[in-house]
Image 1 (cartoon, rainbow, N blue to C red):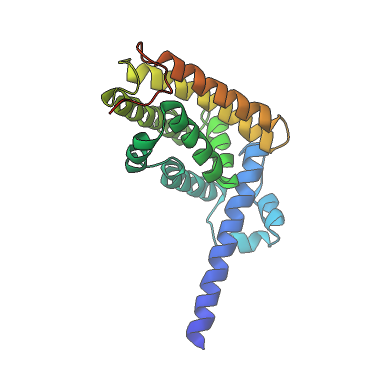
Image 2 (cartoon, rainbow, N blue to C red; image 1 turned 180 degrees about the vertical axis):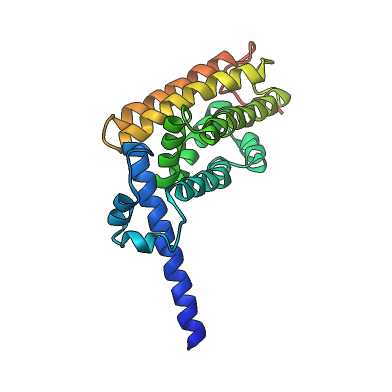
Length: 222
């Protein structure tokens, strides 16, 4: 009985901790980190301010936890390299890019997208946010797309191109469109228009890599 009670208490504690992170990420994304108080976070969760400190030492501790979770979970929002290999056996280049786009859209939850916005805002005044922006928003995704494009080149699905340059340019535009996608979730943009432009963008880059002897969407002859 005592063991069950302790288990339930721990479970409740973890649920409250997650609620705090969700509430804080939403408030930070909308109002800025400096514009939000611990009291406001507690009120949004529906707990006392003093109770919040049972889960986090400070507001900065909440922010650091959001950053840690972002680093851990963002790579999971895209198909793995093994999944890419499987997709490349069955899908055209444009279809692969579309699959990644919609995989990310389905995988990014409110807290992750909020944290992405927080990183974007705080990179001008928070050293860790600046480092995370360049590492996990710019460099790491560009590396992912570079590997994908090189896989396509190796399979002669696209013509030889500067994979790094194409990956960097595609990712920079994707970052801008992702911000618009998050704005749309807040009701400040047309989500269908944003998704349509994302698809238009990947079609454009696919066209740049099109084989000289065939269409980008033609399967490689076995």
